Amino acid sequence: MIGALEHLARPLLAALDPEGAHRLTIAALKFAPLPRAGKDHPRLAVSAFGLNFPNPVGMAAGFDKHAEVPDALLRLGFGFVEVGTITPQPQPGNPRPRVFRLDADAAVINRLGFNSQGADRALRRVARRARRGGIVGINIGANKDSSDRIGDYVRLIERFAPIASYITINVSSPNTPGLRNLQQASALGDLLARVIEARAHTTRDATPPPLLLKIAPDLSLDELDDIVDVARALRIDGMIVGNTTIGRPPSLRESARGKEAGGLSGRPLFSLSTRMLAESYVRVENAFPLIGVGGIESGEAALAKIRAGATLLQLYSALVFRGLGLVAEIKGALVDAVARERRDGLSDLVGVDAAAVTAEPWPQ
Ligand SMILES: Cc1cc2nc3c(=O)[nH]c(=O)nc-3n(C[C@H](O)[C@H](O)[C@H](O)COP(=O)(O)O)c2cc1C
Image (tube, rainbow, N blue to C red):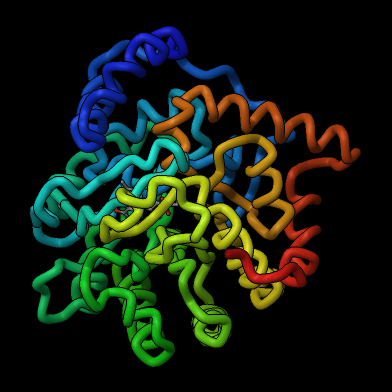
């Protein structure tokens, strides 16, 4: 039924500007009666950071920035949903237009700049659904005009730690000037020490939510060395690799739209983000699990991410081009892959190709 609805809606959504199409999709998820996806095959189950995921396919941050529809997304078959990025205070983000579809490349460029309804509204929504179960992670970021960005993360941890399944520290959006400097070793060390302390004093005896770090795919390998060192030393629970790229691969077909400023996602991000995932995997040495994100648009791409080192997956851009049916397609392909390779579960495939991927020529 969701397939038929999507089929009808696709030409309408494609004719709208991408942000308008996105608002309509959120409204439909809020108000339309949705079918419930079938129960997941047991082979898809994944345990990571102390959480049990029914399947490894997550909705990436940025789709449900204000935590309006996490339950609808879980119902449609995602194994987990990451809402946000949420900033402490509401802020409008950059002027429109700020999202561009590159149809010929199956890609998106966005420079939204953390448009956020702010922590209060998101917190009320997440708290209201907290007892329903299902894994809902909270992705947090600093306000653009904040005079104390680390303080922003601390405040958000204090507010969300009691109700989040996990919390993602987003220091990798390219659209808030200077934000990515928080990935530099000394700043990152300060930030992570303070958020870990905030988590400890907020949750006290209760089980604290895992803390994940979301990094950019545009880091040098020296920078990645430092980040993994800091993350391991401070015992972060996991890393998400990664965010959108400020790079523009020469293969982009939509050369005019490709010049728009912002972060590029979707198909052209696949090779770089998968390379950075494998580079992370070999450095992390199983100290914590990784979530692989960037250009997943098929079962084959999802499997390649797992083989490169991802315990869990997230996607966003391909849903714009392929629709929500892609989630079931990926899950089916993963069940088949586990059977074909005669493994017990997906975890047996995590990272099996990581070393080989790091030996390939650097992706263009
Ligand atoms: C329109 C748009 C908005 C996004 N907003 C956020 C965000 O607020 N926070 C964040 O961490 N990532 C954000 N992302 C990045 C995605 O979570 C993901 O890391 C990236 O798009 C790569 O995955 P994909 O190729 O499957 O889209 C956004 C991506 C898109 C396309």
